[in-house]
Image 1 (cartoon, rainbow, N blue to C red):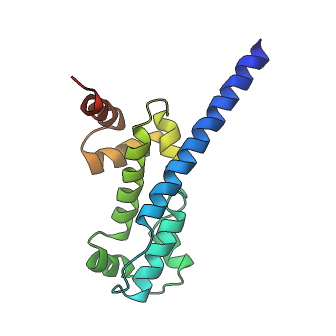
Image 2 (image 1 turned 90 degrees about the vertical axis):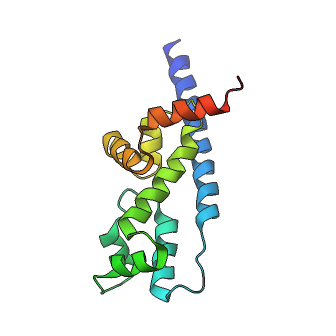
Length: 150
């Protein structure tokens, strides 16, 4: 009996993982690509960020290393081209992906946090609050109310 319960939980977790991966892949496809009008360095940075968006090690330093950019002002140049600094862009994209996952009521917030690139739920919740001005739980509740017919 205990084995069956464990097996059922494993199956449920795998189903959640598949749903998360599919949703995040759809999101990544929607945001991929960059205008030809951007400088080649910025296009390269965007491509790298989009390809690695949900990797928890993605940050400004890792982008600079991976894209072999020696210029320390990449964030300033990125901000001028895209409208957000590189760190802010990464955070905003991750949080936008998280809002899509939060629509699935059965996905726990800690799973969503890990899926979008945060090692700790607390860090995710702080970033979410910075971006959306509410907690993930509050956002989920508000989204649920908006979807419910009266």
